[in-house]
Image (spheres, rainbow, N blue to C red):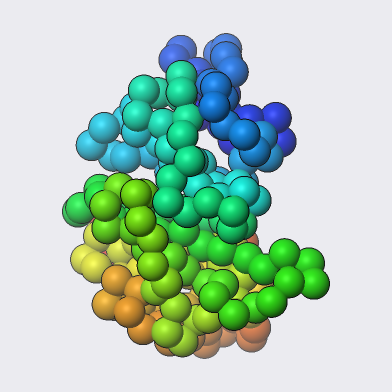
Length: 176
């Protein structure tokens, strides 16, 4: 899958060719994608209009319970794929309260803030440590939660307030 400024595209031949896979996706500028590791036809798309979901490999998209709010990043908990996190942003000139990380425990149907210690920050990237840590890359460093987003703390030694636009955790060596 590829998220673009013109929707989602899908390849079924190792990226030699691509076809549009955006039916029902009302916001075409896709900022992030997350695929369910146990069910690859289930994919979430982060957009400025919220989070969308397909359960049929991109043939049809529907809105989730996270609508009318901008989402920049997504991650699915590989140990419980009903748990999805969305990193949010404040629109230009918009209020900062309520922005940060939101969590769904029912595969995107409903969402709640998971922001204590990170609220008011644009969350540009998210990553999950298979041992249970959740990481958020923001406009001023990395934050970690070991409580599923319940509380966050900065983990920035050596970063000196950097903008962190992407994160990844090595699944074979979670401390990396």
